[in-house]
Length: 79
View 1 (cartoon, rainbow, N blue to C red):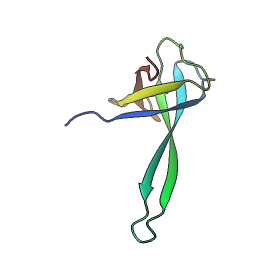
View 2: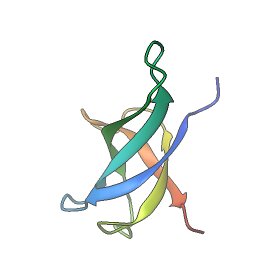
View 3: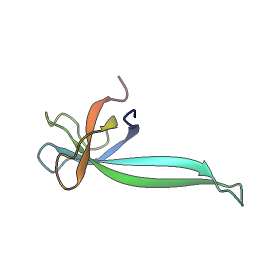
């Protein structure tokens, strides 16, 4: 099964080797046919502490690193 890759914006980089990424998804409501925006925060492993708040990044699923970290940063999304 392929690993999921998501794109989002870094909202926090305060923890050591961890960033919080806000991922937004858009979909049409099944009945109202209105476009809805939903967002979710993921905690991702950033081994080099290279990403700062406001950066756009791609994250990839991985084996659990800690209680809340199941994602790693793949690359900067602008590159």
